[in-house]
Image (tube, rainbow, N blue to C red; front, side, top):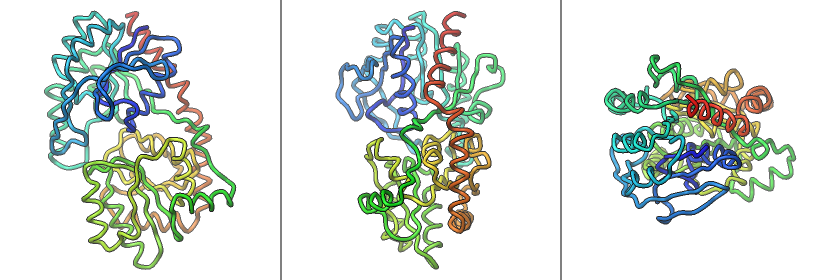
Length: 382
């Protein structure tokens, strides 16, 4: 097959969707011709090849809008490049970035259209975001789904809340994966102690979270929980991520008097990321909205005691292998951290069981890439 992949960002941009696309398509590139058409954000305009994937980076203009976690992108010559690709199937991965001109251009090629729901319909963030997302899907997002020959979603929840039931005959769940040969427990105590010093972890209970600094990730409630925990204890927080709320998050930490307990870091190499998880005592995922959560898979695969909100696709991974918290409730977060901190070994055992029973069986990249290949081949034959 000739597959043309559409997403506003691609490697080396380090986001959840971008990680999924790289892992899936470097596998499919062994047997298929893969072209990714993306923006030039973070890279130069032009064409290149990486891991067998042909990458076309278009000159782009970013348009920042309130309540959107990422800016909209206007990509020059997109329709021209779609025609040039001459693909059997065109794979859209962010329905918020592509409009009628893109759909019409794909139709003119005679190729099939696939859409993956990485970002489900927002629910529980705030009134403007929730209703804005619903209005978008009612007036345009569902039109993309209607035109699609096949729809996939990264979790059952994302499919159920986003895709109308009338499209169920062409809809499939294909979860995100993880390289669990990289993300794995480090059991040598001496090595962990050395890594803690190398990576700047402090004495006390070390909490870690990983996610773009946006309202949807719930960082502000985690900061309030850290403030409460430090009234009678010693708790530190490492936030891995960047985004539009970074300055606000730092200022809030200062106002709460916990800026010496909080650090925000980003740009960590993939190979070093498992070490950060393994140096931590607890992983907390306080998201208000989470269709799937690659970081959750990473932390659990490393055997880290895990706390997360019971929303979106999180329960499909965490199941009964960790502690759940309410969204937007800092006291509940603090109580959960205290509970997990009182019995690290029990919760570490739960995470390791999740790795064995769920992650290794259901989130293997080779299996996931094969599943995409199957649904795309079936769509092309139809």
